[in-house]
Length: 230
Image 1 (cartoon, rainbow, N blue to C red):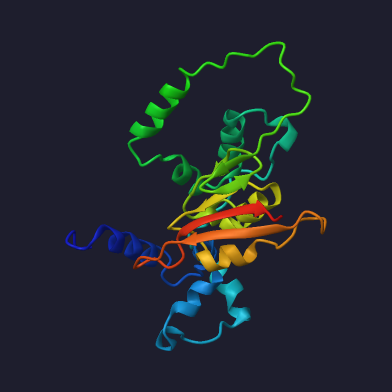
Image 2 (image 1 turned 90 degrees about the vertical axis):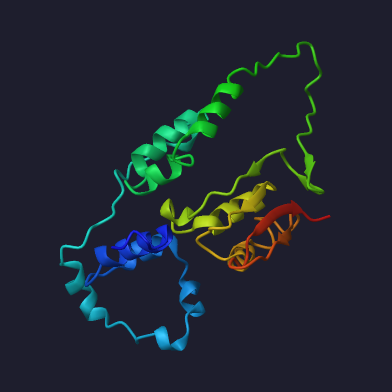
């Protein structure tokens, strides 16, 4: 492989060569949405897949991507972000785990942030009336239930097939902000369309407020904030 090729092209070629002649459905679905095929020209669509041939392809010695374990701790047993990290290491695939923990490879910003966060001490306020607490906040002009925003994480389908659509739906139900990553597994339109217009009861309807920043070559990156409608 010529070193003169762009790095992204080299990565793509390695993946194509690795799965050449094998069924690449599983690794493809880990990072792509079914709608990706709709963006291809008709000349790239070879034809319909014969379902009877899939099992034959699977018997070949294609590399398999599997999770390390299917056992997950109960959610109420996870008490801190460190517990979430430990559970993720045990349940994510060998491909997904290093991807999510790489922290821009050098870990410099990641380690610096952890170092500074450890210097923050919380001083308890004693003898305060905490009978009624309001945790609502306004971020970017949108009222949220908590001053918390789910940060963008690329290729969320590596962790779960629901990907960014699952995160957006969960945030909408709890009125938490969500920032869609540029390199999402789904397009911004798909993620926004997946958010339910209402929660479990008709009295707690949800509206979706979006800001889509379109700049080539991306189509659908932006910020998705789900807030209660008045």
